[in-house]
Length: 419
Image 1 (cartoon, rainbow, N blue to C red):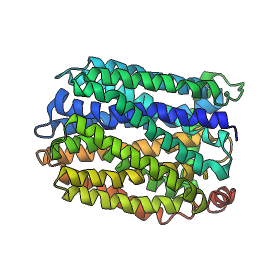
Image 2 (image 1 turned 180 degrees about the vertical axis):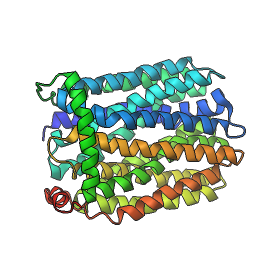
Image 3 (image 1 turned 90 degrees about the vertical axis):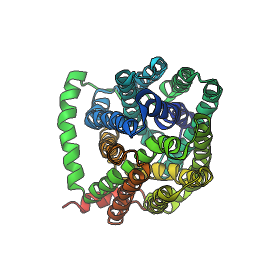
């Protein structure tokens, strides 16, 4: 294991968390829904749901093909860099969005999220290259933990601008942190594998390869079951992340400064949770950890429906945060254990396809329920709980995800359990 590469890889989580925290989860999400669009009767919820769903649809359609191109043409790092700085540029331009600029804010939000989510396909594919199988659970968890530290840094950098009402500078500071701390990953992570295939040929092969990958997923029973469960519960996780600040602002009356404090609390508890669950992910297996987290998240959405004070919501946010990093890191480790060697980019493209396809439905459900019921966000968040419940039921049927030290057990199991 190359420690410099591990540090560079985890620093990218620190970098892109600026976008996740400031844009997707708190300041821009709330600003767009509450101010740019207006959210008296749930219109802001509906438009933010459309923005997120459009972004995820684009990522879902392109990720498997882009992952295959990265593997075949040997241009993973170049695509990684290009998608990253697409997001950085869009984030900086969000400083120009003002009240009533619904379409401009929508387009920049979509470009930012497509770049952010698209880069994760290439980023995740580096994990098997930098860590042996028995270390992947811990390294994955450490990446998320460092990411939460990045979220905290980004929000603290934005806080002075929030206090004086200069939200545009919040977006500029997030772009600067994202662009700066992403640089070590481009300089230090392993170079692309040499390839004799040109980009045009790689595109053709990637399209055919994507069809083969989808066929593999449908053929390999445990991989198919895991991705089916992941598709559902990740939809719930992403929807809660995308709408939690808007829910707190509209339903419970949180101000922008309070929202930053709330999200800082979530990141602190998520950082602790990611570290604490890292070793159990290896020793107990990612399946056990994900199941525990799904039970926790079901309880969180039920409590969110019932909560009636800001103090209660702070407590609930701390509980939710403790399981946020654990479920994401364990899911990534689960997927890593199911990937044949040499097809990391392609299979992680399919992983993104499932996660982002799922994220199309959840935001639409939340936004539509809220708008249909004249802004009733409590009913909307309760509806999201169904995604966690269905994901838990499907995951119970997966016969994989044991301790990561048992390398080869999962891949061998895939080969012999095809139907």
